[in-house]
Length: 165
View 1 (cartoon, helix red, strand yellow):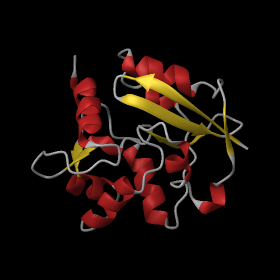
View 2 (tube, one colour):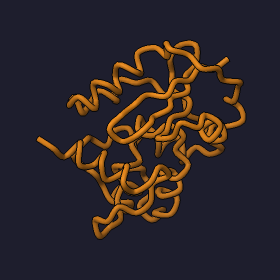
View 3 (tube, one colour):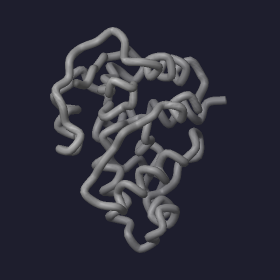
């Protein structure tokens, strides 16, 4: 059984879906848990019930928005995809530092497949645990935002928050 909680953040409601051990299986800037459960790989899907206690993730989110820009790094995530490249790209994405976004081209290179820019973009689009796997830190080559499942205003807010001194 999974648990979920919607947290109030400056970027809007952030719902987190966690396992019994507190690992995040799905997260996003929505108050609709069904939207998140659809993102979870079928092998990891389970019913979810609301809970006040979702483990340490709530405190890490609070710390992040209070100014500790690396607080989300400590959150354990549990992601699964159908392919090894996507799983590898998600691990690499977690290494992109706050305040140091990269382009899709650079992300593809960091992920070990410099010519696979579309595959790198697909890893961002398929990410079920935003902002803990920080796909918001990947931009177009011209520096524009590109896409973001939770809306470009949220992506801009997160990037501005991380760039602030």
